[in-house]
Length: 443
Image (cartoon, rainbow, N blue to C red):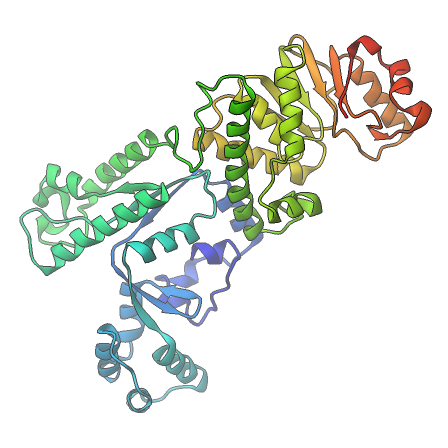
């Protein structure tokens, strides 16, 4: 259902009753649902079975499928269901016999039933398949994902409880491998006692007591809040609290940043498109090469960190996906990333959230939608304008140049500041507009 509401797959109305109860109460899919999901910071997924019913791209909720499909058609379906539930081969004779035993079927209903009888599969779940399913679900790595297993009833040790123990261990191992959260409610049930935690005074081993539901919810939320992504949670993480300022440290930070951004933006592109994700052709080509943090970016960061005077603040213009700003922020430089395009701005914001969630970043950067800010707010500031090239009118260009006057220094590319410049419009021409004592040229 998550993939359906994200708009990645379309589950047709005819099979929806086997996916969720009361599908008529669900709102129709819209782009708004996708945007809401993409803004969510925490997801809770309950897993109650080590089996899943797959039909084409959809997964049926097992109890709903039994209630709304198997039970609906009664004894006629039982021979098929027995074979289906043990993974036995379902032949054409059994399918035709099942269909003939169900009376008064309209053509559409008959076709749907036959399709399900032929194509539905009951798939077992082990650590490997659970891991793949979690990775497929995790469309927003920056969010907090918690997977909840079924509870084990104190004092019972039969086959059902052994299955639940195996479920818990499987999901715990898979979530650990994927780096997401896991919650087993069995401990809370044991602490409260079966008679108080479970429905009908403890005799219902499938449902919580109504009053206990708030208790389990509080414990789950506390688990989520206390388990917010710890330092080192993401792969290729570098602890930037203790890095030195040397080139070797910079290379390590840049390499880790590149790995994090490549995996993260692959997810974003898969959920939208190259243009909607803010990558456009330039970054799409870099993503294909697994090189979002290019050598040019590393060289620029090296110049700023190791060769230029240290400034109180750094404003990075046309910040792209935020690569330079993220590196400066990782080295505890107070940084602002600016970009005038909404898709790029969103890409930087999303990337920063992911890097904070991973522990790669602890502070900053600030992120603003715009070309050059109207004023400088904090101390001596370096304008990183090496990528500041944009199509604007002469009046807008003049306004940008006037704003640049307010900076203590400007790092720029000699033949490109706002627009391509050659000859007299190169460094000398710019120096006539901006005091040369504040210029640092970057080739």
